Length: 205
Image (tube, rainbow, N blue to C red; front, side, top):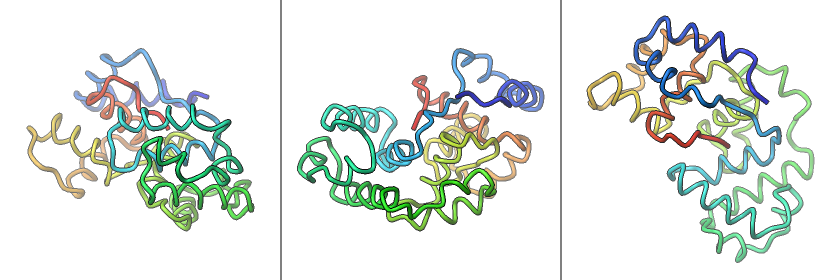
């Protein structure tokens, strides 16, 4: 699934922001897409916590090869040693299994998600063990395709903003918020292009 707002967003961002204009022209071969599965998107986000996109993808592919299917029931019942051999820490395994339990036992109000605004949904998701604000924001961007998410704690976004807007000087959250005012209401789109500027491999969860 591709966002129906993508063309409008890129047109407006390119008109307002010189860096965005250059990045949109440079990376015009792909757009943000949802994989369409809430559990696997959250699971991939947990796997990707605090590691590079490349390493996260490698670990995820090992998981896919090691188990029959990435579903709540399978993850919940998979032996810890199997997941450890895929490169997961004990902590991330406990997070994945708690996530699986939430889905298995219908502890998440999935049917209500589309009606919730970003902050309401983040507040619900962070009740799951191992899901903090960053992971919830990745879910909003990559599964629900919410257009205006700004993940201030994302290291990649911090690096890209520093590189393109602040001559590689360290940047704080206040400066990031001020910069992002230009991107409203398309912060997710701007973030996606800034990620791509660091790694041509499209970010995906």
